[in-house]
Image (cartoon, rainbow, N blue to C red; front, side, top):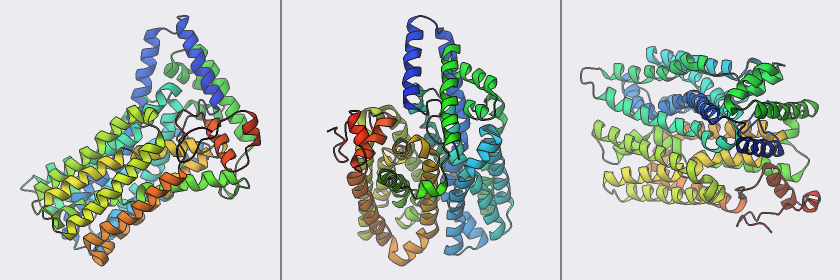
Length: 513
């Protein structure tokens, strides 16, 4: 695979700095028309928003399934094992979808791959909506899960490859924000459909799942407005088309020409020194082994706290806490969805100021406290509103750090040559853990009770907090090359880095030494 969640325009950091410097000088000389710059910005934003809607499909499934699974279970007479399979299978299959994303997008292009993902969403939604029994419903989940897995990798890559470096920090979060918007939409749709008094339970869940095809249909119909990735076009020798796209998104013919040269340099370097999966998973250099485990770790711990399982099974948690009214539970879902969305929007504006590591550590620590507090709530039978409040705070804390920052940090840890496979590995582990937790949530609750469930995941989350505190370094304000040199120095392989005067960051304080 030759793509990743981070920029391909400026795959080499010095190229990015050159581009930014050139743009500043061009603006100073009046070579870039302000109208062209504004039009370019809006074109990039439009492309990022439209492509990000694919992520809202995953979010919609998380949100709407919280209520739909109750109706499905009653209508099809599912046992707890079958319920877990229906809920968890989508993310479990999505993990394997991430593994085919690279070859698919490299062969057919980013736009066609996004279109195929959307078609899979639509087909999966239709199959689920008309499913007469468990196995057909599971088939629909599998088809949708494959689409989710491919989109989980390809969509952020497409955004990165069409976004200028100065706007990438904010626009890269569109994918994560879109997931949370989808979750909120799913909750609202569930609330609206449940309010239809004349509809049977069977009709309700079929409507909920069938409407999941609306968002991908919107993306398919809007793809005509989106260009192909300039990087992919250049890998196919279509440089003139790539330059046309870059002029549209950069607002300058001069910058487009410079960026074409940068991309060509990166592509040539990749073709001359390809990286096999064996070399990636079993590197000889210690610093690369450290980076590999760090990337796997951040992908693992983001989902090991059971955040998506809590969303999927929020109906069961709220009902067990005493919210017997369906409408009351649905209003609780909406509050939880808002508390998961709003922090993401806030974080995108201050992550570069606050830093990655503090947000991850603080987020994980507060999530741990919330999970333990939820265990105490069920232990002492505290009022149901306490559960709703704690779930809202839990999601707020998660989305204030672990949710959006995980992907940014992982992309910054991995050097250019390893980044494609690094982000694919991170995505695979992340979806695999999410699916595994969802597949075992009800069984864990049956075995331990709700109190034991939250205490168990509270302990896991505490270990995750220790991981973030002791092993995750700060990357704020560091170029991608400097970050790599820091890893080399900490692994005792950085003589050249010392000669170049690159300061070493303490993994605890993040301060240079």
